[in-house]
Amino acid sequence: KVQEISGRMFKVVSRIGPPYLMRKPLIEGRPYVGNNRFEGFAMDLIDEICKILNCTYQFEIVPDNNYGSYDPKKKSWNGLIGYLLDRKADLAICDLTTTYERRKAVDFTNPFMTLGISILYAKPNKPPPEILAFTNPLSLDIWLYMATGFIIMSLIIYMAARLNPDEWQNPHPCDPNPVELENVWNLKNCFWLTLGSILGQGCDILPKGISTRMVTGMWWFFSMIMSACYTANLAAFLTMERMGPTIKSAEDLASQTKIKYGCVRGGATSSFFKDSNVTTYHKMWVSMESADPSVFEKSNDDGVKRVLSSRGAYAFLMESSTIEYEMARHCELVQVGHWLDTKGYGIAMPTNAPYRTGLNQAILELQEIGKLQELKQRWWEEKNRNSDDCKVVEESGDETAELGLDHVGGVFLVLACGIGVALVIAILEFLWNVRKVAITQRTTLMEAFIKEKNFALDFRARQKAVCPPPLEPAKKKSSN
Image 1 (cartoon, one colour):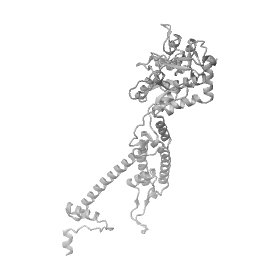
Image 2 (cartoon, rainbow, N blue to C red; image 1 turned 180 degrees about the vertical axis):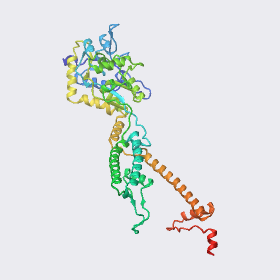
Image 3 (cartoon, rainbow, N blue to C red; image 1 turned 120 degrees about the vertical axis):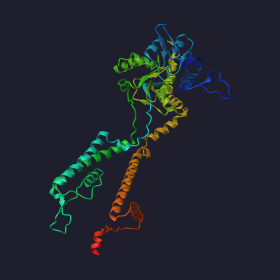
C-alpha cells in the first residue's frame, strides 16, 4: 500500500558504525542539525527509498548503540530492537542482521544486503630475509651429511687409488724402465676431485683404475642428484616469505590454540556460534567462552583494533560486508576462508507495520536497477580514502618477487670469507717459502723476504730463476 506511505515521515533509529552511519565532521566549528548531522550507507538507503515512496525521515541514535539482544533476566530487549518495541521509532536501519530471535520480536523487510560470517585476520608481517637464505633448500642435517660424505669419499678414493695398480704411473714416460712409479692421488688431489664434482666444475685429473672410476662415478651420481634438488628449490626458498602460524579456514582456528579468536558479545555472530549444532562452530564457541582474558569485544571497531594490534595473535569473527570495508581501510587486514553462513541485513520495524509491503517493493526496485550495488560501491570504495592504496599494494604483491641483496647477501659473505682465508693462506705460504729460501741461500730472513717480495710485486716478470744452493767450504777448497 504505497499510497498510504506517501507523505509520511518515518522516525528512523540507528547506531553509529561506519560505513552505515557516521557523524559528519564539523566545518569551521559550525554544528549540524537534524539529518545533516549524519552520513553513510543507511542515510543514502532510506533517502533512495523515500524518493520512490514520496516520504520523509528523521534519524535518531539509539542511546546504548547496541543492535539488540534479549536479556532473559530482565525479559526485555536492548538496543535497536528495544527501541522499536517501545514504539519510539518506526524503522531501524543499519547493519542489523535478520535472525530468528529478532524476527519473533519485530518484522524485517527483504534483505538489502546479503552476507555471511567470516574471519578477519592480519596479514603476517614479512620477516627480513636471512643472511644465509641460500642454505634453506637443504636442512642442517643434509648439509652435515654431505660434508661428512665429502670427507669419507675423499678418503675412500685415496685408499682405492693406493690399492689399484693402474693408478701407479711412470713419472717419466720417455723411460721405458723406470726405477720408481708415482701415484698422483694424494689427499690434496682426492679432496679437489670430490669438491669439483659437487660444485659441478670437474677436475683436471681423472682416475684410471676400474675401482677408482666406479667410486668416483658413484660420487658423481650423488653430486648430480643433490645439485639438482638444491637448484630446484633454491629460487622458491629465496623468494618465499617465511610466515608465522597462519589460518585458512574456521577449521584451522578450531584445531589450534595459539591464535585467539572472538566476536562482538551479544550480537548475531555470537548467537550463531552459541546456537550452532555444527561440531566445529560449537567447539569454537566453547573455546571463546572459556578464554581468559576475554576474546569478546563491545563493537566491531574494537575487534578490528585488537586484530591490528595483536600482530597475528588474534582473529575476529564478523560479517563479511564489514570485513570488506575494513580491508579497504587497512591494507594489512585480510579475509580468511569462506562464509560460515548466509544471511542478510534488513530494515526492522514493529510487528504488523502497515508500511512493510511498500518498503519491500522499494528495496526490490532499488536492487533491480542496481542502486544498492552503487550505494555499496560509493561507501566501500569511493568514500574510502585508503581503498586505492590497498589496491596498489595488492597489485604490487601479485608481481613476481625479485631478489635483493638481502636475499643473496650470504653468498657474498661466503665469497668474502673464502677470499679472506685464501689470502691468509697465501701469505703463510709466502712466508714459509721465504724461510726455505733463507735456509737454502744461507741468507737472513729479511734479505730473503725483500728479494721474494720485490719479485712478487714485479708484475712484468713471467719467469723465476732457480738459484742453486751455495757450495760448502770443504767442496770449495778441494776444487781449488
